[in-house]
Image (cartoon, rainbow, N blue to C red; front, side):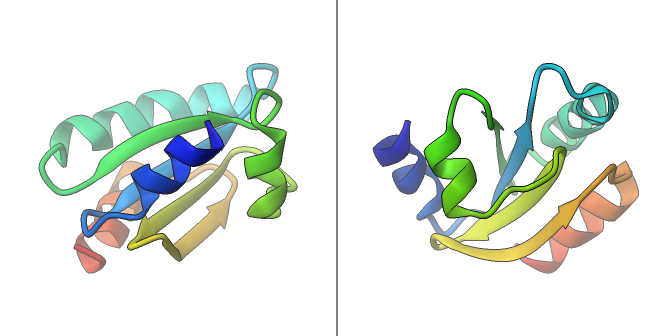
Length: 99
């Protein structure tokens, strides 16, 4: 996934990355919110999920210490990052501010 991840985030279009784990209860709560945001903003943002247990190199590179952690990338750079649950309105506002 490493090489592919770098090519995905290194674009002009913002990429929202959901760093999660299968065992994480808050991640399960966050997932449908992220799906709604992805549906509503499908032309403005790409959304991908990274399982930190299956992709430890990526998690380590971005110093993911808690899940869920959401990060918004643009041109390969993190332009916003937050750990913990985020609501739909917050996420849409953040994505619009970086579109």
